[in-house]
Image (cartoon, rainbow, N blue to C red):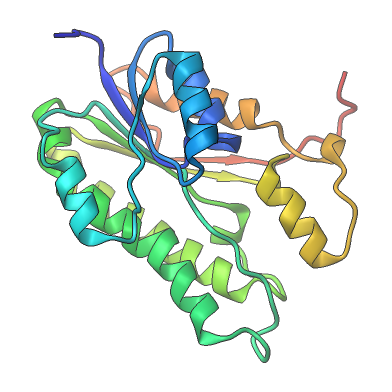
Length: 231
């Protein structure tokens, strides 16, 4: 049996989740979740990771998939959806999906894995958003779900810190991912990669939190695209 620490990363088939997986692969055994089976298989083959293709909103499937995990050093919540629109126009289904994926699925998976995390005094990392710190027009449903995710992380941190768990929330600004392309299309603007954070930059911040010394608990990290020219 491997003595390397074990990490489970949701949303690990592309974007920020895949970048985090690549950054952790040298030191961790990886379980990677993702909805795109082809992309997930490709990343797993590249990194020697195990696929964990579980629909996070299916409570029974998640319970079955977590039943055999008795120790977990790191849980990274990177999966998420963004539904944009004015409050006057956004249907209730968009609100429901935002909360089911961005909040309820996170809470449910974390709850089921708490015994495994407690067993090794592990860590939970939640990839939030700048929208978890402020709400802008057209972003109400997404921002509300990310504010709720922030509240969940804050409560989890206070409840579990005495058991040795560390809980870190990461608030990236706009990141150059496939999701960002969709967002910019919805906003009616161009996708300009040079203006956004690279997924690898977010991954480096996660690694910094995960590798913090035992006397340190990195609770929150805010990252914004730099105004300096990218070379």
